[in-house]
Length: 445
Image (cartoon, rainbow, N blue to C red):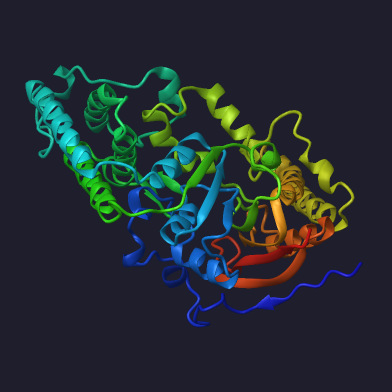
């Protein structure tokens, strides 16, 4: 059977020029409400979701699914547009963040009131120790009895991701927040702290990989947390006494989606799965996951990784068999073999480099398994938009992710409507332009 792929040079309603990272992927000021409670640096923007909701003619009679929900861009935007949605996410902290972002039944005034109380208690405790939150500590740090993470948790963090004094202040703040764990606004307080941790308190830098830049000896913690709480409460006030549709968020593996969502209930899918590269997606949320105790040791981290699409060599485990789904796919086998041949030619012999061909097969096999599984929950005529990107992470061998996934989808029974160009980005290693695309499919049943 012949495979046909239609390309479109720009997304529906998007200007053809300029398609750049800064403009196309930038979140508009008017879109920051709810979305900016906590958001991946590389998340796709809310206006992308709106464009496909319009293109698919989705309204309040429909249900939208995001099977790789991340921090909830699709489901938050659907709620704002009055559309019921379901999000599925495998990473525990990301699932938590998306769940909090679509729960708007919170009393904003009470949230502020209790946050102020917690802040006062924490600041008083710190002052007794000779620590002022708004000025750098200038005493003898060796005389402080600083709180620290336990050894199992500490080993999970990127080295120097947070300095000792800010960590100490953060752990005291968490202890006081936990005293209100039974209150409905407890989760909002934790999410506010997570956002403050990543973008203000920590030493982390995203460019786009997560790493450490300038080390902060000390930095405000309580004040920046209160600023994040106020941002959340201000947004909640805008929807007070308003009715919005439900948004369900489920913790689960997108490769087993028919086991957690009823059949024939989804009208559209708007999502962005992992790309086949060396990005360990669990590192993006590692700091907040560890400090807020969503992951406490290596066993819990491994359990979380096993529920993800195999997209990097650090997430491969004995017994992985998703490659069985594409074992007869000539294109993928040739691509994996080409990567392995390049490795041998370049004498690249590290344990990770030897797995490049394996992870390529596992990635596309996992996506094939996902596409088959998700077809069981789709209504006839459902349309799907998958944001994916070309990659050259494996020894500079180009992986045309969109093309390959489109062909896999067609082999399962999906109709390929077109492939839209979302943006281009320049690969540092190859100096070439990589396409980030949206595969647009239809499931006819």
